[in-house]
Length: 124
Image 1 (cartoon, rainbow, N blue to C red):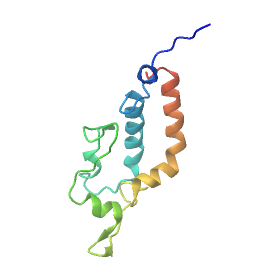
Image 2 (tube, helix red, strand yellow):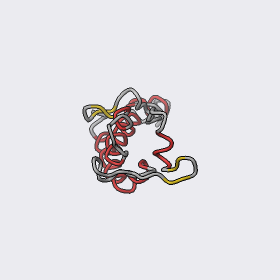
Image 3 (cartoon, helix red, strand yellow):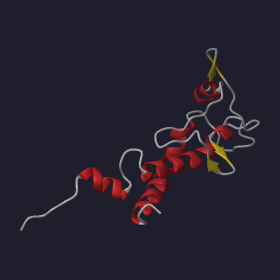
Image 4 (cartoon, one colour):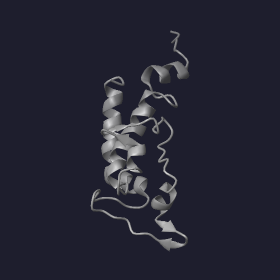
């Protein structure tokens, strides 16, 4: 008995799991939302380039989360001119350097569970 299947690319597209597909975008948006509380926050310029009103902005794509402030790299690594900078935690209590890694340690499994739920719901 012959079995006729659609190409893998079509199956992936139907499931939304192709590169840059809706599941990929959902995953990145969830990461951006969870990352927000770990991003150092003084006046909000850095964090708000990614999250505004609790939702990801245009700086979140399927593949990237971009903090566009010119000082973002300094804050991310916590080093300016070879010296460690202070990360203030008065507005974001969990703020830290390498905020993506800290977020993943704290919330990665929750994100994986939400992505699986999203896939189980058919990407809705």
